[in-house]
Image 1 (cartoon, helix red, strand yellow):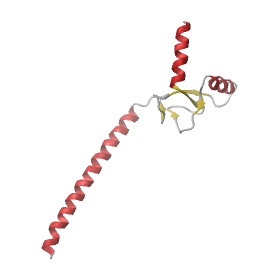
Image 2 (cartoon, helix red, strand yellow):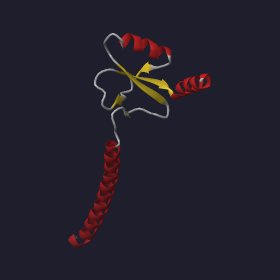
Image 3 (cartoon, rainbow, N blue to C red):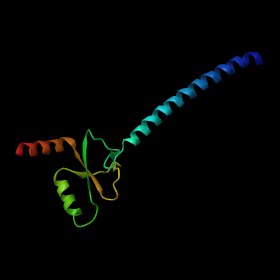
Image 4 (tube, one colour):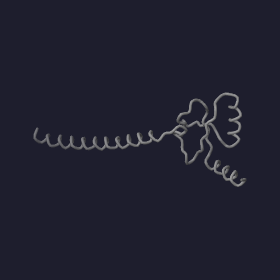
Amino acid sequence: MEKNESPKVAKVAKKTKKAEADIAKQKAKEARLKIAAARNIQPGTVIGGDLDLWVYYRAPADGSLALQYKLQLEGMGYEPCVDGEKMAGMEGGVLYRCPREIADERALERASKR
């Protein structure tokens, strides 16, 4: 009976080893992508945001100009970020976002006035 069980055990071990190797390759690929992304982070880079959909702006959280910035940005269509977005190198302050479509319209208006 042991002779019959040995080949089965060996087959299972081979399949398990192959599956583990595939998992290890996938994790290595993910790690390489994560490392490469971390190298490209510069101060001012938005982390966790979608630059195709949103335009981001950092404003001070306190001080004499904080309320002025808040009112001005909200008047331009910006809202405080609530989805966990962060700006690399940002110490304090509030990160605002505006739909890219609105920001592009504002840019076209400014360009047409020049």
